[in-house]
Image (cartoon, rainbow, N blue to C red; front, side):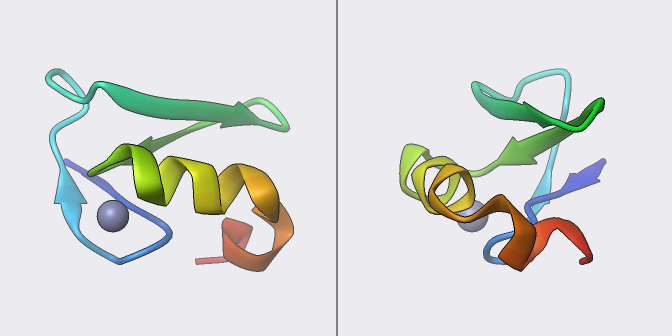
Length: 48
Ligand SMILES: [Zn+2]
């Protein structure tokens, strides 16, 4: 399981529809809203 860095929810990376790559790392999200929030300001969430 991966962790949605925006809301902290556990996300199954095999089923995840919402993902973004940032600085060589792939992040998974529970929803498009979380993905959009991350992409707006990735640095805010990266350290989590
Ligand atoms: Zn989320």
